[in-house]
Amino acid sequence: MSGFASVPIDTWTQRVGAFAALPALIRELGSDPFTALSAARLAPDALDDPGGRITYQALGRFLDLAAERTQCAHIGLLAGRFWHLRDLGLLGGLALNSATVGDALHALVHHQHLNSEGGAAFLMERGDWTDFGYAIYCPNVPGANQIADAVVAGGFNYMRELSGGGWQPTAVLLAHAPPCDVSPHRALFKLTPRFDTDCSALRFPTRWMETRVAGADIRRLRRLEARAAAVDDGAVVKRVCRALRIGLATGGSSGNDIAKALHINRRTLNRHLEAAGTTFQELLDDVRYATARQLLAGSHLPLDDVAAALGYGGVTQFMRRFRCWSGGSPGDWRRKVQRADASALAAGTA
Image 1: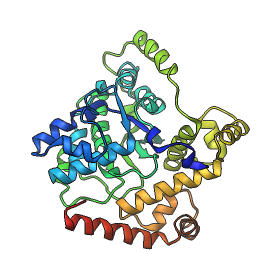
Image 2: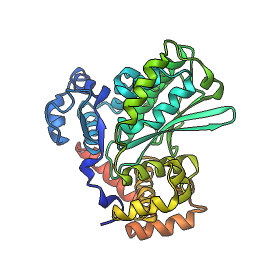
Image 3: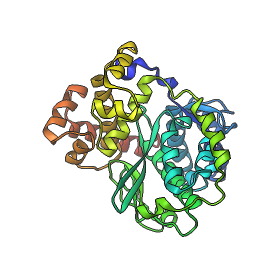
């Protein structure tokens, strides 16, 4: 047993949080949420408790089914546009009580595991511009496009809560192909997003990072930080996968980069992974392969850009590795998956 296989897929979980509102939204759109919950292999009350947890894969399945059954291709966007920081529980409290927007975003990124073991928040500060983004690292997740839309729409609301109503992104990046109708995205973000990117993110001027958070309480923040520090941050394989996905997004995915991100030395990292039945290279390959499949299936991103997003120096190396993983070329794999999706959609089963 190695790589992803060393962690059962049903242990990658997501806090319900604002997803608790999904059944009501599905009902408003004229469909029955309970049949979708059942088809997604979720209990009828799985989303009743915002503090409860469900598997990340089941969340993706449910969003996919909800989009199909309501015939609303942007249901993830609709769900996320109503999110608020308070919906994040402890994580939201950390952000709301941070001194500045920058402090709040760093808290959201650092403690993201409190809410999700399937997707990672990240910050990339590059001079005058900063990206506040999200990338999925759980393997084989359906509904990735819906999850991305929901999280970015939620992030848009979080930034306005923290910064004030005048905040506006300069760009919205979404790691999936453009929908037939982009008007719902344009109406929410007040601009047309850039689709077919390698990660989903909100881009804004870095100066907003210094904005003070109104109502922040430093004493409450210290209490919340103590609670957050007492929560186990998960199995080593999950921590490494999370750090790897962030590293691929931000340009630092070497073994030394990941050890530094986890605040341990490289030898200690290797020992922990050996004890878990895997190696750093196996996990790097797994995260790269999972990310490649997500980008190939859900976007029109050129193969050169997919290769770059995975940290390869050129497309040839990527194509060679993908053939080792899948037995075929990335182009053939993409065409096969997208043909299957189109056939399922035409048959009314996607």
